[in-house]
Length: 243
Length: 298
Image (tube, rainbow over all chains, first blue to last red):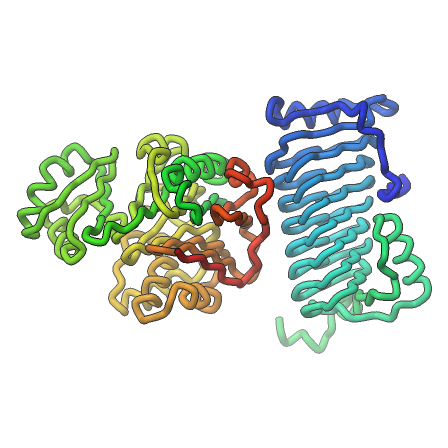
């Protein structure tokens, strides 16, 4: 499935199906979303009064647009496959965990482990993300307009993490093949994570990702690239005495 | 897991509603801690009296006639206000230590929850809503308070294992997490003369802070010390006579959200707990940084 172009995901919400969590249960919302079939006309959803609820719009597997009006708790949009979810507020821990495809946009901040283990799709956080952003990411693209906390991209395997602000301690610890692009300062790099050269193909790729994420006024050339030194890939026999 | 909440009022007009606001916050976090619940609530100090909160497994037996017996034993006026399994004893500030000693001989089975000029502590096993009802927390007034819903990991589900823990005058603490070096720290504190009621790791954290404060540190400095001296996972919320503080360990995997408006500073394990507070939609909401001490005082 092609990645959703968030910047052009302007949808007509005038016919949206409105789901008020003050009156209906979270289970009713998620069941209604899970019952959608390919080609359904109910392509626009609006969720009111989330008030920090957990697991809002988890397991969506159809290309529908969901606008959540307020802040959500744990695991919003987890396992998303094709949905275009926008949270008009902040998100608790684990937003977009194991996302497969589609997009999630958080207008506010995101708590710990945003996009953890994500396999695809695009997660945009317009505020700050906290610790462990993109931990164990496996193909997802994450774009954070603000800063990210410590231990972000820990054991990140593939995909791209783009940070317009600063990164906390131990960025990319034990990283595999994910690519990290940070515009601000990095507090410290984790084990086996190093700064890398920005070659033309990286600049071109990053500019494309920034465009897809709807980021304007920021150039790819303002970022530094970080990735794996690949020194942890194989056991070093000189370290045998340590075990 | 566990859920913790804290509320520090800046706007005095909210003081009559403190108990009701804290109750809603606490009940909201029931699924983080259905074993037990507790609160510490701080009223404005009256100046000429101190309070001792006590707990009994047999309140009808232990609290009957206690006021007269205690007054006679310490030679000063005493009042006893019973709330279910707890009672708040009021007496002169200079009589608190004598009263504590007298209680040990008059009622050897009761437990002292805490003492001070401002604090009252109520905690029991059961669902948070049942605990709130039992003590009529909604009607309580005050300047600030902290609360806890417990899902036990480190020690038994008992009244004394519930939070908050208080180990010094008007000091108390609630904790989400688990400490791994609490036995060592407890031994060191016992050597200093601190007394422990339980095997609970959180009681060690409370006693650690009380010990630092007794050695002249302010609460901010004492909280800084936890970052190097306590090993394990923790988000702590602490209360003192006129203040309220928060600290998270450097790994910070235990959740925390804070909100501040002109009227209050609030803490919750989750944003859910804050959603019924007045003006929350326009509050400054943020996640406290790891290894960073936050502190407010009246």
